[in-house]
Structure formats: structure tokens, C-alpha cells
Amino acid sequence: MIKVIASDLDGTLFGSDSKIAPETLAAVKRACKAGIRFIITTGRNYRGVMKELEGVDLTCDYILSSGAEVRNSRQEIVSQVPISMELCGEVYDILQKYPVSVIFGTDEYDYQIGTYEEIEKQTVSRLNSYFSQLSISELQKAQMFDQRMDTTKVVKDFQELKDAGVPVYKLFLFSDDREMLAQIDKELAEHNGIAVSSSFPTNLEITDIRAQKGPVLKAYIESLGYRTEEVMAFGDSRNDESMLSMDFGATIAMENADSALKKAAKYITKSNVELGVAYTIEELLKRSYPGI
Image (cartoon, rainbow, N blue to C red; front, side, top):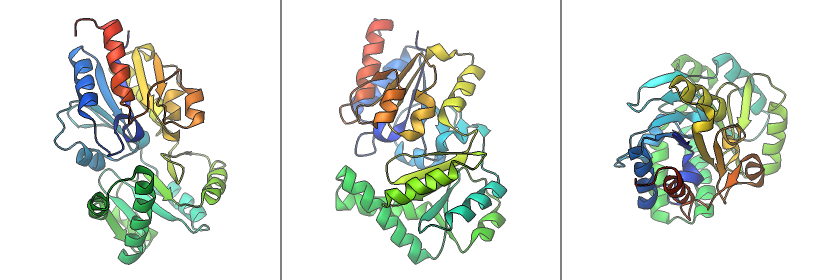
């Protein structure tokens, strides 16, 4: 019987507006009422998730920054797996060969190297790419731009980042040049100690090899006394592959997921805009928790 539901956010639990639809929230709450533990598993950091969930009445656990941080239902840190600063430096040296901006993600802020003006331009470029895919209005663009800049700290060089002494959870790359990203991906694959994934076709995300959603989720649920066969997991992108390729009770790719993830998952549900998570949870409750 399923006793734990773990879900990615963007492209999965969230709709195209980066919000949880009322129907989805209601389904998740019904599952929690039935005694099912709900865990958000996301590439976003803690600050970013809390911003998106502001005003949402939901108690859950969190696997953040693709597995680099785990927080319990009281939002207390349970575990952290940052990238060592030495490893960050090695990866950054490789990336400097390419015309790509690098974001160093922490639990609160994103650090970027350059001038404030350069970072502004890079942020606008990223948002234009996101919103051309999502068809979100210019007003929402402006709001998102302000939010991104509010959570970004600009440093002049890598040494300043190092001196800040913050634990770096993830390096995030963005570029419309997919061939270049593929070349970077190939080169980084030869580097021991890191895992490379992505949330969408125009980015790469680099974490410590131990910070991957699947193994982290498995370790966390087992520490709470659950078994792998009691877990249902949802995802839509490459950074969910470590989770959906594991032998959990039910691994479910969204209809909008990429083809590789669909092959890795045991099942496929409706897309995020069709409320696939809500649909699947309701079906689970009908079959396994009648009367809820």
C-alpha cells in the first residue's frame, strides 16, 4: 500500500503558472488526511519553494536543490550535501571555457559572478526563454524578474564567493545553445564526484553525486520507517530520473515529461496542465483508501 507520495514541483505539481491548482491541493490534502506522507522533491532551494508556496496551507517534507538539502515537516534541516568549494572551483574552471553564465545555488540565495548589469541581462534572457514556453504575461515577467534579482547576490569573482563561506548546493547553467550544453554535459560526465541533470532543455544542474533525488528520497523515507514499495513518486524532467528509475512502489512520469523519463517510469499520467498529480492521487484514494 502506498504510504508516501513524493512529487516534483515545476512541470509536475505546478501548472504553467507555477502554482498548485486548487484541485491538486485538495487531492494532496485528502491523501494527507488518509495518513499518507507528502514530500516535495524539487531542484529549487528552500527560499524559492517557500516563496512559491506562500499562502498555501500544506504540511509536508522537502527534498530541495535536487537532493542537496532535506527538511522535515517543521521545515527543520535534516541533512545537507553541499558541493565542496574545491570541487566547485574545479567545475567552474571547466565552465569558464564556455560562454555560459553560472549560478551558484545555496539554501537562500543564488550567487553569480560578474557585474550587476551583466547579471540583469542574463536574468532577462533566462526569463524570456521560460515565458516563451509558458506564455505568461508581461506583468508576470516583471514580477518574476524582481523576485529573481531579490534572491541573487552578485560577486566579482570566485574568490569572493569562496570567502562568503556559504554552502553551495548546486551549480546551474543556462543557454539557448543546446549543442554547447550537450558538449558541457559530456565533458562534466568524465568528472568524478558530481551529478549532472536538468530541469528543461536549456539548462544543466550540477550537484554533488550524493545529492540526487532518488537516493536521497530512499534514505529519508527509510529513516522514517517506510519501505521503498510504499512510495509513489512523480516527475517530468531529467533531474527526476534518479527518482523515477528507482524501484519505488509506483514511479509516474507526467504526459509532458521527456521520452527518456517516460521510459524510466513505471507509469505515465496526464500532463501537469491536465492536473495529472491530482488525477492519480484521486485514483489511488478510490482504490486503496475508500471512504476518505
